[in-house]
Length: 241
Image (cartoon, rainbow, N blue to C red; front, side, top):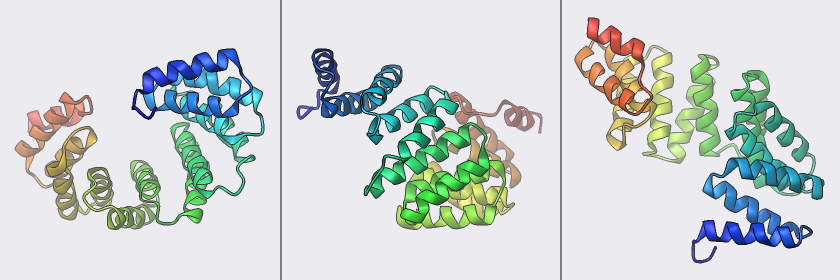
């Protein structure tokens, strides 16, 4: 691990638990390396086994929740996060991670009221957590709900972490949902200048279309489609206009 050979480290940790399953520290190292490598199927299996071996330790529940969220097993993820919360003591950083991850899982499972509560619980502990503020605001914007709250949280995330393209995109998209297209264009243009991958290019295309800049909009929609996030619907509209 010190040499940054994470794959090799992961293999050695797995051999170690095959020889002796009683060391909780080795299990946490194994799960940590699998999370870093994105080996979520292995992480799901190992974290479940660790939950059985160390039922009063929170980290196996956390890693199991993370892996199941990524694998789209949202109900299992919610169960793991909820169970693991009971074993978090005197560790606000871990508690924040649990609540925010639970919020993500509930959101993916379309249990929006519970998702909002989990994010609110995380922000009660750390009101200036820029990542949680951004993610929470973005989910609200996608649902077109509580947009004033979303705008407040997103603005604060940008104050805490300026020039973050994801945060700029979120704020611009919230302004778009509020019908403030000129203001939205300013923020989304800043995000695009930093990098127009993923949904950012599509969002910028959307606002340009609303501002009657259709040829420019088409360019960004095509860029978005090339990164597998483009909207066929919007591209068709632009081509017909």
